Length: 336
Image (cartoon, rainbow, N blue to C red; front, side, top):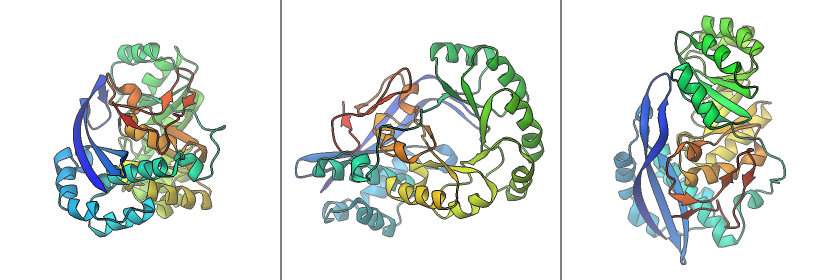
């Protein structure tokens, strides 16, 4: 098995702003695993909040390239276990794990959702994200992209007023993501006002380690709350189950599809809602997420929709939210 790594700078249609950062380009690592003339592709985007860059991920992987090349590839889960044993970060592991799953599906002539024995006749519609901006620009983004579900990024001193203004121009479902910017008091105060404005749930309103605050929110908040920054890896699911109504799994943060599948099973056993989110990936990463769709309650897989230019072909999301799965097997990815 041969591994190749390539860097891309993904240009965004608009400046993407959340409570803690803003950016116009997304740096990403694309990993290719090739075996018997077949290539599988995976992706992990860089992220300053978690201190992972293309160069740091590339350096990690390059240290074990000879071992990857000689690895007896079989099940993706076995390859994931091997990568974990080498001490790689979850971001670097994600790129390789997604490539391994894509390769496995292509070698076995099936898309991943079929290998997992799931049915794509029913799946949730992705939300479309509106980053923090002036109300005028947020409305312009919504007008540019009419969509049935919007995720609204908040974390300002005018959050409820922003949602009130947006609601006047749309009857879409709203989801609110404060990215750790609120306190428990703000969350409990804002929730009934936002519920009246048609908000479906709140995502990670408090800082990731504010468990005391989340205990208050769990008791008093009138909207469901989904964990994001508080739920990074498999070990976080059990604790989040005590404080949240659901979890948002990010493949890059947990280490790929292998742990994500286990996190989904664990969340289901605990009665939690399950969402999978993206981190502004190209169609490479988004196509991997799409394979999980039949297993999810909610999904945030709009990353490639936010780009000026994409780098791959794979899953296509139509204007009405319908997902077109490619005839290519695995994750269905082909680099352009």
